[in-house]
Image (tube, rainbow, N blue to C red):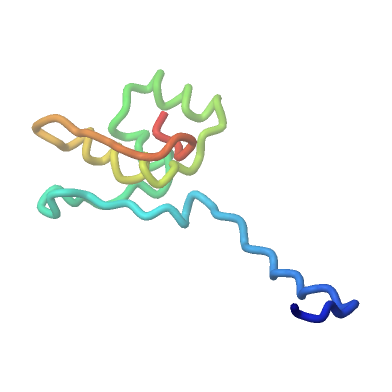
Length: 92
Protein backbone atom coordinates (compact mmCIF):
# COMPACT_ATOMS: atom_id res chain seq x y z
CA UNK A 1 0.00 0.00 0.00
CA UNK A 2 1.24 3.43 -0.86
CA UNK A 3 1.50 5.87 1.96
CA UNK A 4 -0.74 8.88 1.62
CA UNK A 5 0.80 12.27 2.03
CA UNK A 6 -1.09 15.45 2.68
CA UNK A 7 0.16 16.96 -0.57
CA UNK A 8 -2.31 17.51 -3.36
CA UNK A 9 -1.38 16.47 -6.88
CA UNK A 10 -0.23 19.31 -9.09
CA UNK A 11 -3.03 20.84 -11.12
CA UNK A 12 -2.75 20.46 -14.85
CA UNK A 13 -2.01 23.62 -16.77
CA UNK A 14 -5.15 24.96 -18.44
CA UNK A 15 -5.31 24.24 -22.14
CA UNK A 16 -5.61 27.11 -24.56
CA UNK A 17 -9.08 27.24 -26.12
CA UNK A 18 -9.37 25.93 -29.65
CA UNK A 19 -10.29 28.61 -32.16
CA UNK A 20 -11.57 28.41 -35.73
CA UNK A 21 -8.05 29.18 -36.97
CA UNK A 22 -6.82 25.96 -35.31
CA UNK A 23 -9.11 23.77 -37.44
CA UNK A 24 -7.15 22.06 -40.22
CA UNK A 25 -8.58 22.18 -43.73
CA UNK A 26 -7.69 19.81 -46.55
CA UNK A 27 -8.62 20.44 -50.18
CA UNK A 28 -8.72 17.36 -52.35
CA UNK A 29 -7.57 16.91 -55.02
CA UNK A 30 -4.75 19.38 -54.66
CA UNK A 31 -5.31 20.53 -58.25
CA UNK A 32 -8.50 22.23 -57.04
CA UNK A 33 -6.62 24.44 -54.61
CA UNK A 34 -7.61 28.10 -54.79
CA UNK A 35 -6.54 31.13 -52.78
CA UNK A 36 -8.44 31.08 -49.46
CA UNK A 37 -10.93 33.88 -48.83
CA UNK A 38 -9.59 36.16 -46.09
CA UNK A 39 -12.56 38.51 -45.78
CA UNK A 40 -16.17 38.63 -46.93
CA UNK A 41 -15.40 42.13 -48.23
CA UNK A 42 -13.16 40.44 -50.83
CA UNK A 43 -16.30 38.85 -52.31
CA UNK A 44 -18.14 42.11 -53.01
CA UNK A 45 -16.93 42.52 -56.62
CA UNK A 46 -18.17 39.03 -57.59
CA UNK A 47 -21.56 39.16 -55.83
CA UNK A 48 -24.89 40.68 -56.68
CA UNK A 49 -25.00 44.12 -54.96
CA UNK A 50 -27.99 43.14 -52.79
CA UNK A 51 -26.17 40.08 -51.48
CA UNK A 52 -23.01 42.10 -50.80
CA UNK A 53 -25.07 44.68 -48.84
CA UNK A 54 -26.73 41.96 -46.78
CA UNK A 55 -23.39 40.44 -45.83
CA UNK A 56 -22.31 43.85 -44.53
CA UNK A 57 -25.65 44.39 -42.73
CA UNK A 58 -25.42 41.09 -40.89
CA UNK A 59 -21.93 41.91 -39.65
CA UNK A 60 -20.12 39.02 -41.28
CA UNK A 61 -16.48 39.98 -41.77
CA UNK A 62 -14.21 36.96 -41.43
CA UNK A 63 -15.12 33.55 -42.86
CA UNK A 64 -14.66 30.37 -40.86
CA UNK A 65 -11.93 27.99 -42.10
CA UNK A 66 -14.37 25.83 -44.06
CA UNK A 67 -15.98 28.92 -45.62
CA UNK A 68 -12.55 30.40 -46.33
CA UNK A 69 -11.70 27.43 -48.54
CA UNK A 70 -15.11 26.36 -49.88
CA UNK A 71 -16.44 29.71 -51.13
CA UNK A 72 -13.62 30.27 -53.66
CA UNK A 73 -14.12 26.70 -54.90
CA UNK A 74 -17.85 27.29 -55.28
CA UNK A 75 -17.26 30.49 -57.23
CA UNK A 76 -14.71 28.96 -59.61
CA UNK A 77 -15.50 25.24 -59.74
CA UNK A 78 -16.88 23.65 -62.86
CA UNK A 79 -18.42 20.83 -60.83
CA UNK A 80 -19.76 19.93 -57.43
CA UNK A 81 -18.15 20.82 -54.13
CA UNK A 82 -18.55 18.61 -51.06
CA UNK A 83 -17.67 19.87 -47.61
CA UNK A 84 -17.30 17.66 -44.58
CA UNK A 85 -16.65 19.25 -41.20
CA UNK A 86 -17.57 18.72 -37.58
CA UNK A 87 -20.70 20.25 -36.10
CA UNK A 88 -20.12 23.83 -35.01
CA UNK A 89 -17.21 24.43 -37.37
CA UNK A 90 -18.98 27.13 -39.40
CA UNK A 91 -20.19 25.41 -42.54
CA UNK A 92 -23.33 27.55 -42.83
